[in-house]
Length: 65
Image 1 (spheres, rainbow, N blue to C red):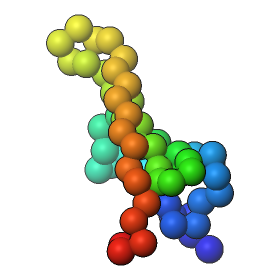
Image 2 (spheres, rainbow, N blue to C red):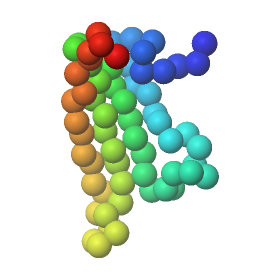
Image 3 (cartoon, one colour):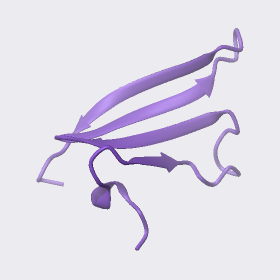
């Protein structure tokens, strides 16, 4: 069975953008399953100063999905 956000275990991490032909080589999106939803984390290089940037957002689970 293919791993998706819907069948992840608690604290499991899934890497998105596995197809590097459609995503930037310097960009990674990780999804962690947490109680009540998911945490999406984007890692990328800032083109202005070449620093590594990490941003995260909590996405709550909704039974309406």
